[in-house]
Image (cartoon, rainbow, N blue to C red):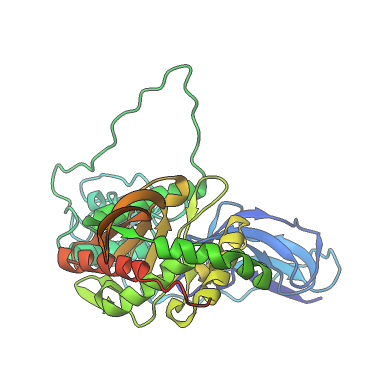
Length: 431
């Protein structure tokens, strides 16, 4: 009989842990190789984990709701169809470097631990769970518990992850976070009044994640929004002329989104300092142009799949990628890697009938553009015989940008350039 460990698989370049949502098999069940055994959730997407071997699920090592790091064992599989209760003998884990070091005394305000939990020299206890790695970083950086308690957590049940605390430290270098001082209390939300007729709805995991990220983005980036109204009559005319042939040739719809993405890509090439990210006091100028595309899910939540290397596709290629990502997003079939690596984001508030919006930046990007509803409006146009009032198709573009690194000149010029490309769209082009 051979016993093998099923480990938490790697599900994306930046994904280091996942939460067990549910087990699809129970101990004693026979499983085939590549058959789904459990469902997990990362900070990007929910997905199923297949078995690496055929056999019998002998033991489950990670319970539902537990956060497991990539590479850690989550189950034991017997590769022979047997229910033997022979014990599984695993090698003991090597001692970590941190465990080998003698414990050193910390200042009274530094984070300290004991078997019962977390505390500081003044006796104050932590109100939430912190992983050993987060506690180690807190000790090394001399972060007091009062300060640690103010860091928003994006992990399971609001836990602070390694990414959360490292991001906090980077922002603190620039003086963007409030330092813990004697007598300081973290701001608390105003109390909510609930009457007998009110309905209480518990946020699902994705809604809580979205809420935390939106608050984090507003805290990290000073948002500024510039608006431009674009005449998109050429685009409307061209799409109406070719969408039937496109549908017949490719079996897919031709929407406005790939046209908007193409204009964004061309404007980013003109203004590459929009395609940047902030890392502490460093500006990272991204080589690739990866456009995030906000998609509304059936439950009302939003998800942002990413079109990688969007500058390498024509309208047809973009249309097919946009349709594929949107369909699989609504069916919860996106891969974790398809939700990472974005360098700029597009959201279409016009699909909700809105004429404009003030979108919130997807961190660590520095810009996001919202396209509004396309409406027929009277407009003054120049003709060889003088000015005339005609009906044109108009749309507002809303560009929110991080004012730490994008000034009004760049932010305003960029959205104006996107509008210019849309207005100059060639109605004689092919798709």
